[in-house]
Image (cartoon, rainbow, N blue to C red):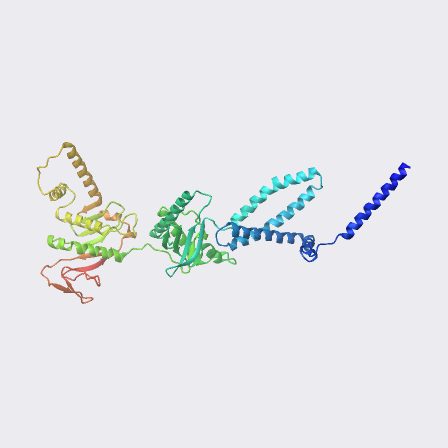
Length: 493
């Protein structure tokens, strides 16, 4: 009886539970608007995911990566929107991240199948400790290769009507502010100095217009042309497997430029064909001989010493420039004025000139040898008499006397090195054989005899301008006053 009643109760409870479930299903209705909103989009997305899994995942990953980069640039970074960076992240999300994850999770589900705790733990360990480190390293490696150099921003503009390139150094936020400012300033100045040294050595480098140390900017000339890498690639003929003749000339010019740069003690940190530009016309800066400027300097020297030569009756037959191997040799007097050699350019920088006062001092020193002679005891005795306006009577201690003797000996040694007085029967001194012929320029040779009994003024035969007798060079046409038997020639020896 008790069992029958229990069975009736169980059947009654089951029937009542079924009725409640049926009534609940009958009363449940979808919310208003879901049928035409998010549910349809979600169902459509699931449909495409089942039909085209890889394509759908690639599009989803690209959208998530691009949206995340937009939010980071707009909300957290206070700088202009970087379209290139947005495109890079979007492309990496669609092409790199999604296919890799799709292949990895498919492989993981096939190898470690099941829903047990052991299978789940195995998949977790393989995913987090094996796949994730290698994937992140590969992702950021590709990102560093694709992304531009963050240390420098280069953009083109115009500077005073000329095409210009501005190189701006980016502030490194991971470094101390004072350290970053100091390093950026030093590197900026060092780059400008190396550029200037290369130009002095004859290397064709962009001309620097302005150095903005406060903003870390370098304004330089914009080169119109292509990179040497692209030029060599375009000049290669695949049929004959040979380069064009012009390409060999370009390679030769590259070698010459690199040799000049290394001779100037400059080492390029990234010397590749991508950092070499070929202009539209093949040209390089040649080492300017500057013959005209050297001629003008010698003419100025002759103009300044002409009154002395006139008063002392000195006859300087040839005034020449020389460039000996001895860097300390500044002048040479051959046969008491038959030839006077002067160094106009420093030994370290043959394309520049020494100060005019220094060259004039060397010339006056050589003229003294025409009156007194070489560097001997009478020469220094006469110099001591002329420097002190009395003879003897000076009280000097033995220590000071020893110092004077040592100083005089050092001066004789320096003068003997800096000045050479040669007396020989040949036109060219024997020591001039050591001159470098590549640096000897066509120099003015002046042979003159000055007549003091002349007119008050003289007329330039070229521009017909009347000049004072004190002026022996016409400032307008730079022509020396023609006197008998004075003449100006060019010595090409």
